[in-house]
Image (cartoon, rainbow, N blue to C red; front, side, top):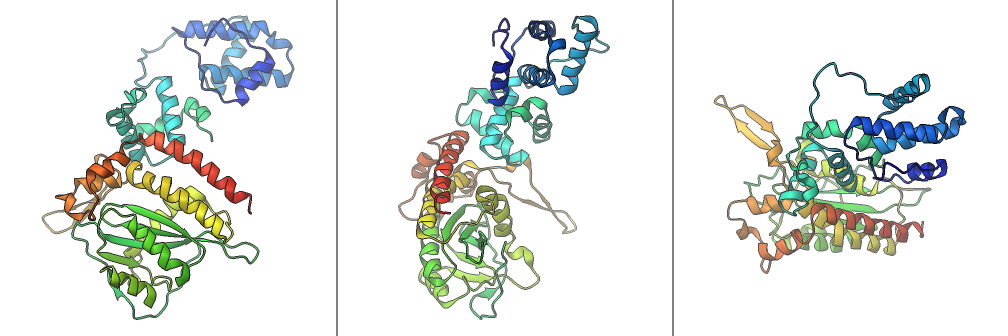
Length: 411
């Protein structure tokens, strides 16, 4: 920004309300203080009315990155003495490792990805630089997850960053009550339904969430209801989106899954059907956690009427953008089990173990053996690396707005 330019109060108002990313680039603090002083003098700060003073202060805070307390101190110093001078150093200072542009880039990427956990965002920043060549992340690629949370608390970051219905159990003897043992192989699915909510007595739609236990490969589909009329086509379409062969289908005891039609479909596909045991809530825990951290975060709790157009609009966005995002661009944590000499198991989620479900699939020993006929990693690579994680998420969010507009018009 040109430090010789002194904007009008109206221009300052537009600047603050527009949330511009422009910041003041000066060689040292003295030059910043001189700019603040020139702005205060140009507008005769002492004679301004309270609203104009507030606008001017917010403008200076936005342009310099200073906190409200810091700006109030400098303005008070100007009112009392007519000068703004740096205070004498009482201890040596050191240059920060992450510059203002790094914090702005972190806030931009964080906002696009809707504030993932620290380790997941660290992995995305590494991929942005190492895989997709984003030079703006040259320093952020070494950011630790703990310091990421520190940067999220800074004033510069915060100014840039804009800010279930349970299924009923059914006593049906279909499916075996057991916790599946995957033996480290993909194809063991955990499945659950997520109700979007009712309104004024009108039933809402449902999400069907399918997650692979080993790779966390996830597919989500939208249905008008959980009757067999809607579930069979939806499950067939969802399972076609997995690149590897299905071995096991595990659900809770909801009648939408534990019925003859679904059992017949899975038998035809040579997939074993199991269901959760009583008093073992962890049997389907993976799908339950994904319901909140993935689906609710993406579409919230708003009531969506049961219409074919609504379902089609969301399913198009799911299949074209959201499902590829979950599997190719969103890192997940993977548990590591350690057994000591006494046989005690210890579980951890190391930060270097965060990876996308696609990366996890490729990391499995002899991973190609699990792929469906006609699917190869060369083919999947074309989709995985067509865009960077942030580029894909940005495009996905734009398409999401379009999708919501087509639905809201019908509500």
